[in-house]
Amino acid sequence: MAENKTSERAAVSKAVDAVVVGAGFGGLYMTHRLRQAGLSVQGIEAGYDVGGTWFWNRYPGARCDIPSLLYSYTFDDGLRDEWRWSEKYAPQPEILAYANHVANRFDLRPNYLFETKVIRMAFDEVKQRWLVETDRGDRIEARWVVTATGCLSQPKAVDIQGADSFEGESYSTSRWPHGSIDFTGKRVAMIGTGSSAIQSTPLIAEHAAKVTVFQRTPNFSLPAKNRELTDQEIAEFMAGYPAYKEALATGSPGIPLPPEGWAPSEAELRQAAEHLWSGDGLLSLAVLPNLTRDERVNKIGADYVRAKIKEIVKDPELADKLTPKDFPLGTKRACVDTDYYATFNRDNVELVDLRETPLVEVNATGVKTTGAQYDVDVIVYATGFDAMTGALLNMDIRGRQGRALREAWADGPKTLLGLQIAGFPNLFTVTGPGSPSVLSNMITSCEQHVDWIMGAIEHMRKSGKSTMEPKPEAQEAWVRHVNEQADQTLFPKANSWYMGANVPGKPRVFMPYVGEGYKVRCDEVAAKGYEGFELA
Image 1 (tube, rainbow, N blue to C red):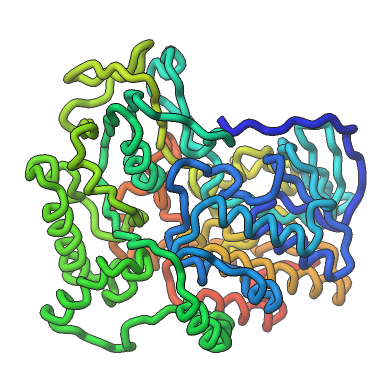
Image 2: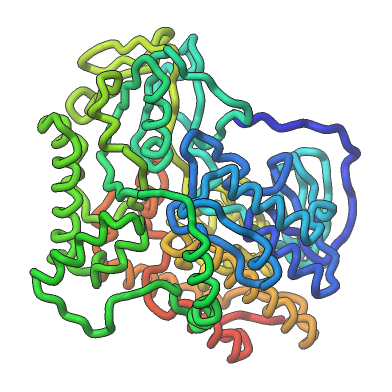
């Protein structure tokens, strides 16, 4: 568990224009924009400092899975020019340093209450303001609330029988301690094979006496081929930066895509699939047209990755167990790794296939499956997150007539554009469900949402409107559209966290938006006086 530097302070009771929940990249930019507009803003953050995802996720090997040069703010040219990324895929300490640099440069920390969790927020229909309450006894009234709580920020609870009985060391990749951990000479159990496990296992295996990986579902992972950035690469990116910003402004992802209308032959697709091993990570998935919509295209890409796994892992039986077979490539978030598959060639690394021998329990000395007892010194839980909705539902959010968000989302999340929720006036969600969010470059999606929210707030101020929320019929139409778009893809074929399938009892709904032209649609809605929203 990542320890906080708990500090004493008096409870805060105040009224402000806006509350921003979260000090990750979305929250920091939102706070900056609100202040620029001359509004009073109170930020609230559970950690003891800024960084959001990158404050909490400090496990070995943690780094971004898209190129660093793209994982950067675009709103300030001076900020862009003064920051230099050192590697193609920035490691967690460097990304956290970037967040700290942003907070320092724009002096954002004075606006935040750190080590503070929002436990409840309720809309007062008489005052037409939100009352936000925290675990430190704070009571803050605000006209607007912006939740920038992150899509992957609420750890999934460890629901393994006997987990509390283990007498050795236990760690979670999603709440890694802020000091170093020495695995030298220790027997380590890694439970899970998602992104954090795939990034951390190779590094832990370099020092541990033995690493036993407990795998329920094998994952597709693409090589990072990480390296230091050269001056020439940075210069070339800067030369093309105006065109990149222009592309983002028009709603393009800003990365090379296959020519529109390209209908490649099978031979051309096989050649394109080779780019999956180029080191471009998740961006390489875009080289194959309609990868998540066309089963023929997907099979060619998936077969290429499967062949690479068999080429890397020397033991054919082990390679087969590490090879995903029951879901299409990209329908669960693909991982980006450094030597993950090759790590299983080491003598001190063992794979336990939980489909063959299911996990029974964790006990005092280790992990027990139906096949054997594995005594270990350390257990690392890489069990993921309650994605996209978990952080919001972890707060008791109540809108009109005291209706709880948990009740409103009982059958799955409903929003308009992933930005607002009917019945919850003046509450905005940055990269909420129903927006591209986790299927996009998150930092540019955060910027796009913050800019849209700021535009909506300025529109309300100029037009003298008190509240803004989606019209129920417009929200229902958007939810139908989101579902229809998902149903035209291969995404529903996978039991992924995109669908909420990793959390027992969570509604099975595909949460991100996969349609085209999302930003264009958002801009059109704003241009039409926030069509589909009720401004009262």
